Image (cartoon, rainbow over all chains, first blue to last red; front, side, top):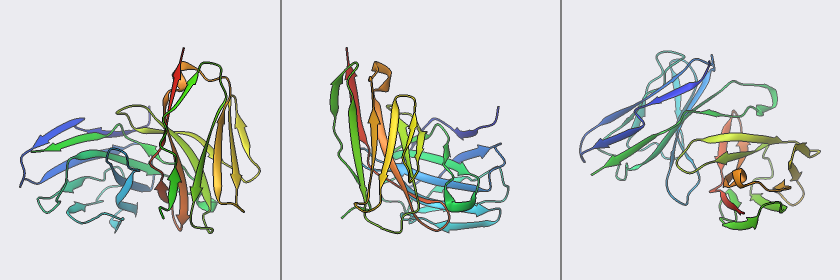
Length: 115
Length: 110
């Protein structure tokens, strides 16, 4: 079955440590995204990638980094510079269609807690 | 003003009721629109796209009003399993840069 997989489901880290969240998809989608979700707020875009070896900052990229070396993979690193990293992180992918009317497919998320 | 606004709810309705949610968007150049459903502590899942002429999928009806810049979701004959948060999503510009509303929570009770 095709899908998008995030790991781990729960992650705990000490303040000051970098941490990398994994996202893998076998849907053959070109575009991949990282969002974070905080209670009472909509999903906010961190980074997105339309094609291998290319990515763009979203609305809240500060303190995060990504890479897109393979079409299937789009890992997100939460660095120690991110001031409030505790959140629910969602990875998504999509395939471009005319009219930009293509929905997102989400992974099941990683809940990161930093203490 | 937020780019996409929703009433957070919760909407508490009995089984069998009809319930409607609205979502307003600020950018008149918005091109595509979706409703997603999110269960507690889970990822969002696409419920339906919203087309200009309105569209229906079983008990769910989505409408778009470009003049007033809002989309709506109508749920008929509510089921307990409809309890979730419903996210309004708008593509404001360019290549799939989707903007999410904060969601409207629906609780269907027996």
